[in-house]
Length: 311
Ligand SMILES: [Zn+2]
Image (cartoon, rainbow, N blue to C red; front, top):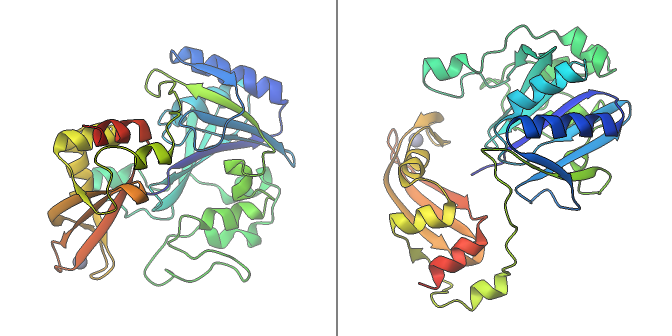
């Protein structure tokens, strides 16, 4: 799976006020919010960074309730909340919330899904570039070119001279945010400038970080440098997902760069565990052109991996 990353940006607030509201939000969804010295890899990582007249809240990687939290913050703090979401490393999307409601959306990659209903969810709607530039204190001519649709004509070209990322790359959003002096390291807190918390809800439970190391994995009974065949039950244990969902994800809506299709199916699916890479490798063929499509699924539940390897 690619990168999933969600963060909200709004006008400068006292860190304490933001913290209090996030705690209220967490308890409203049967969860909690506690200060904790943790890294972004932690499944419950959340950070608050006050930076250049902006407040940045980064949510846990697989946090799905960002609509609710953004609505909550926009209402309780009485600020326009800009929530950015990077989806599976494939595109970025911006949602704007005002006074408890979603008020606008921007998505550069609106044809990502093949189903019409899915595409409707991603359509740009009511987005006002001038308002955005006003709130981010940037000149519109220095960012306007980020707010156009990704098409085959602009793919793999850059919006502005000096940019790091191309159209079609979800990281282009960081070229955009750089104009407002916000960097990727601010978002993932790699320079430890933010205050960090554990955030959990009824659907994102508080997870114990396993104390198992990679050395423990190497000593387990079935450890091998080669690929290991997995049963459906082992897939469920290691990845923590339903087997049907795994199959669906590994076969439907695949991207094929050979025939330039982003909604093909992958046939003859096979999957293996690569222990040294902490990956479930998947392979198969593009249904449209027959080209081999490889892929992988990162293993984050290292304790579960050990459990399976000891069987
Ligand atoms: Zn193909």
